[in-house]
Length: 188
Image: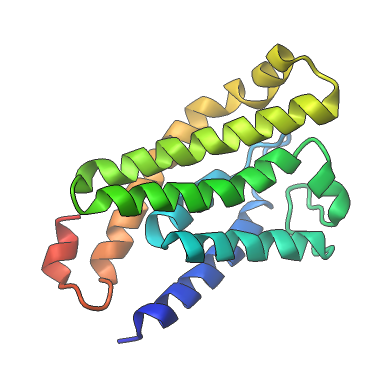
């Protein structure tokens, strides 16, 4: 059985790869496309500690900044990180870290609520940063940016949150963390 650090490294690398691949599964909408990236960010928050979740999403952002076409479109380069979608992309980083921190803080006392709370916090962080940057960069009014950049995503993101909670629970049951028993993980 691999050590906890090795498992976290491999999981973070897989999350970065999934985040890159999920950008290619796009429904083109304006000003922000619909992707499965929020689902992957939620998995990062639910399966990794805050540092590793941040490392996974940070690696993805660095690849994109270097010009690798890992952003939706497909696109890459610094221009994407200063455009209308930048807030969502940086929101992914903050969401993974903060969502993971919420889950870590609640998991021991409120196991059932920890994943749900982590998803709610993560999604709200993505929306807040995405909406803020979209408003600042696009020239839209805050109301127009909210209507275009948040409202259409809420129903799908709720579905993604339920799916992420289910997938994360399945992963935890199948691959218990070193130092825990499979039976204890099944209760998670």
